[in-house]
Image (tube, rainbow, N blue to C red):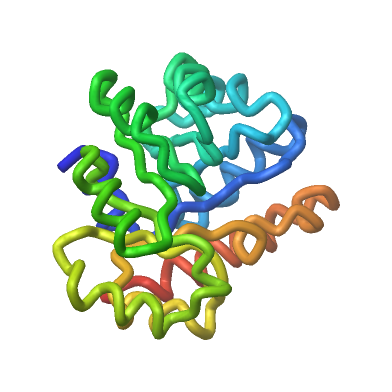
Amino acid sequence: MSVMLERLLQEKIVAIFRFIEDQYADQAAEAMLNGGISMMEITMNTEGAASMISRWREKFGDRAGIGAGTVLDLDTAKEAVAAGSQFMISPNLDESVVDYGLKTGVPVWPGVMTPTEIVRAWKAGAELVKIFPMGTLGLKYLTEIRAPLDKIPMLASGGVDLDNIADYFKAGACSVGMGSKLVNLDWVRSGRFDLLEDRARKFAEAVKGL
């Protein structure tokens, strides 16, 4: 098990930064850390993602686990690893990306939906899979696929909120990925990093003991 997966299983939440502007990125990450969430991904379709990742690695050091999201293909994976990504997450399964992660020692957590895709990802060497889009599939789906596939750790992404986060873990998720419900860009752009920190703290508290 990779160090990043160990950390994820302990912390249970990955904060997803998508389309955040560079000028706000550092303060937003700081707010997440102060609120108790340290696993953070910047999606590679965010402008300047690679430079933000390398800057965060320097700036936050061991305080944070910094990864790349929306790693769709091998070229993007290479860019993410060169920037210093500690993990890579994607909405899709590309075996060449998983293989590259194994070779470089950077864990890849691919996005999958069907039982066939889940097992394919596992056989390709992924130590965890991201079930996506959870918001559409619903919790009952997660419960049903966990029954036969209980050996494969699953991160649930989509539809998570404060009032249902515990249900995701009851259904069998070992962690969740959270975008706008956690990283509220309206607050970020209006400088309300206090609200961001408070939201992070509420989610970090909500998963304690789950």
